[in-house]
Every structure is written in structure tokens, then in C-alpha cells.
Image (cartoon, rainbow, N blue to C red; front, side):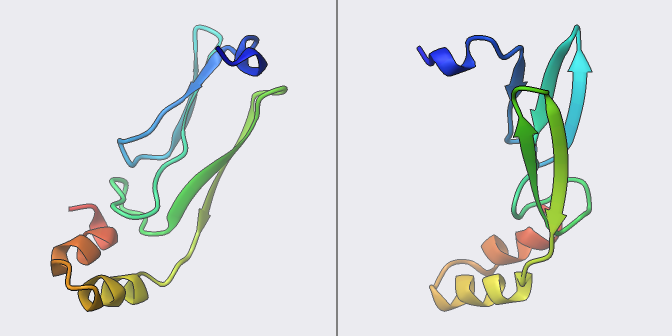
Length: 90
């Protein structure tokens, strides 16, 4: 039990790689997005800043050097697709 979350009527979830926020039946639902494997066509890193007192959510995006990550993936001997999927989520 985490008592500091007892009064929060919302949920933060992930795995869809799609940044989103909504209020349903008075409850805040937030998906901060992902760093890599974008499913919304935006290759920038996605995250969210959530104020659990006010339920204000700031969905944010930042650029990062995807080509550098792809190069490092290949240098580590991993399959190229692991790096290139960062570009479009495929």
C-alpha cells in the first residue's frame, strides 16, 4: 500500500507508445509516451510532467540523437532493426 497515492483519482499507463491525456468519469488518465518506437509518427522522446495535487499534465517532447543510438546498437552487435525501429516504431 502506498498511502501517498490514496487520494489520487487517476492512472498513469504506458506500453502503447502513444502520448495522451484524458479525463474520464472525473479521473485523469495519462500515457507519457515513449523514448523510441513512436506509434504516433513523432520520433522525438516523449514524456509527461504530472502534478498529482492539481492533476495538471504537461506532455513534453525533446529531440535526441537517434542516429547515434542506432550506431551504438550496431556497435554492440545487436540487430540493426532494434535501432532503426526508433525512427518509426516498426
